[in-house]
Structures are given as C-alpha cells and as structure tokens.
Amino acid sequence: MSQTAREPRRYTYGDLMQWDDGKRYELYDGQPVALASPSDVHQLVLMELAAQLHDFLKDKPCKLYPAPFDVRLFDTADDRPEDSENVVQPDLMVVCNKDKVDRHGVHGAPDLVIEITSPSTRRNDRLVKFNLYQRAGVREYWIVDPDARVVLVHTLEEGQYHAADAYAAGSAVPVGIFDGFSVDLSEVFPA
Image 1 (cartoon, rainbow, N blue to C red):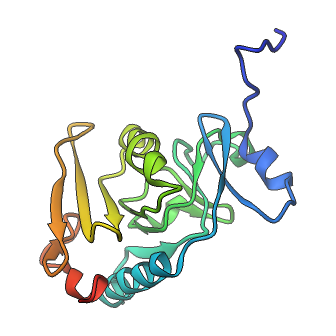
Image 2 (image 1 turned 90 degrees about the horizontal axis):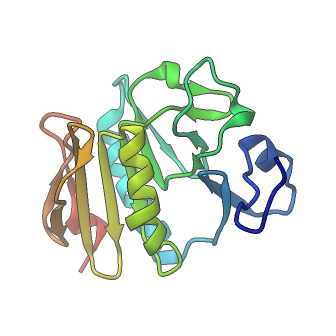
C-alpha cells in the first residue's frame, strides 16, 4: 500500500534507536515527538520527588527509574522492542515487576508514572500521555504542575482514570500503590 498525504509515516523504536541527532524522542502511536530540555524548576521538583520515593523504596521490590529511561508501553516480554510504536520517557516511574525491565528499558505499563509539566509538555502530559497511560494500564498517574504548585493524581479503576484528586503545595499526597506512604509537597514546592 502506498503512503498518501493523509497517512503519515509511522515510526518504530527501531527507527528511534538509529537516530543520532543528540535529541530525545518519544513515540505516540508511531509519531515521533522531540523532547525539550527541562528547566531548573522542573529538575528541582523531580529531584525532591525522586528523593522521597527512593528513600521509601529502599529494600523493597519496587524500583524507581528517572528519565531518560524508555518505556515500551504495550510490549510484552515476547515482543521485539524495535517494533514498538509507543515509547515514552516519564520523568519518574515506579516498576514493581522486575521482569518488565530489560536492556532497552521497560516493556509494559509501570505501576506509577509521574510527569512534571512545562509549557512545552502540558498538552501531551494532560491529553496524549494521559490516554496512552490509561490504555496501557498504568495504575497511578501523577501530573505535577510546578507553576500552579499542584499535583493531580489519576488512579486507574476498571480500565479508566476517573476525576483526579488534586493536592496543593503544603499537603501530603498519598501514593495509592503503597499503603501508608505519602509524598510531602511542602518539600517539593517550598515556600
């Protein structure tokens, strides 16, 4: 079948692995999107979230992975990584099944994904990735907005994310995939 103007070329993880232009990319249904470098605020928020999660996860089977770390959302262990058309690099993720981690990153849905928005990523984080993570079965999806100083927590119930729970600076965000653990936002968004 020939490619027409209405049918954009679909790319795969195999294509991405061959590109050597110094940029990071994600693939959404075969369409590449270049990722911008994060801001200083983004990195400070990421580091604090990572520190709290890392401290809690010490000596536990679940592991924390920061970007850049590829996730082939819909792959299984039997799939060829180079054929994947949905590859993301969440800012932070927690994976509780060590068998999902391979030399290319993660295949399948992480248990927790955290995206820190910026003006250049806000639309993708709230729409495109929201839908991808929901379809893939990510149990808990956080959208962290440093400008608004708020965290939106989406929890998967019966295959759908329902209305998000919102947490403002100064509050504690319970991590739904773990009993008895919360992230202290007063440390994430200091006064």
